[in-house]
Length: 384
Image (cartoon, rainbow, N blue to C red):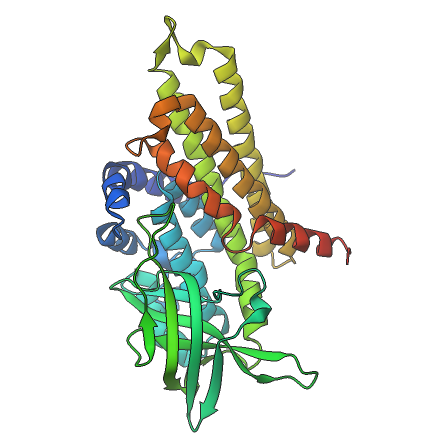
């Protein structure tokens, strides 16, 4: 028998995070969003709760949990706000996870303890101005000069890259050519504050306004040769595997936003009256909310299925792509429907659905566009 229930430990975590999101995040996040200000106090609170260390071993300062624990947490946070959720998602699956998966023992012991407590955030420097979905088109270069890498290039749309607590960015760079002439791409850790590493001002974004996203520039930026992360020439493959995991996490964020739209709509239709009746009594509204709940439910099952394969150590690329595609579509559709239910109030930033609507679109783009997910699914089906 297939059982989709969370076990007792994960359910306890879910309820704890749900309470935190409701009592600590919801009352204040709208003001951070309006000011486009990073919520350091909330991030510190999540650090104290151990959320940044959920999937990492206690040896490195983590909580000894699993990726399921992270996804359950992300879903509950995103039911209230996606900026906070994406800060955690990027900090864990994109900032700390590459170090954990591919770092040397020395690198793990140096970086992970502070990343696991949320005292420090890490960034994932893959996307470039001319290469998003086509990550193999990397133009950033790194050449060895003695015992140092000299890095030159630009990265764009990098989350958690310019906060006061950002400690490192792991970047992909061309470090040579393979025998067949293709680019040799490697991953290199660049500590914040390294000379030649410049962080631009924050982007002016449509959504995720309380999260940190910036462009990064490297001009003759020198870091020790020992900052190579994993095997030379394996950086591209390493980051692709990180993205497979990250897509499940983004699916969890998407499901949270989709479910948050249901939550807010249910509250609103029980209060709002039109033509002498609460609008929740009208079948048109009931059917719309029913469709929203069905989307959230289906998307949750999709990411649970991908998680199950991942946790069992089975190949999960196709399932992760399906989860990300289905869940981001659900988030976008539910945000649109929730805004319609709220009418003019849905267009006002004082209501959460206004934020949800602005935040939903990027979920169809970040960590692999919907088109890329379809391409991956097709390839996994044997189509070329």
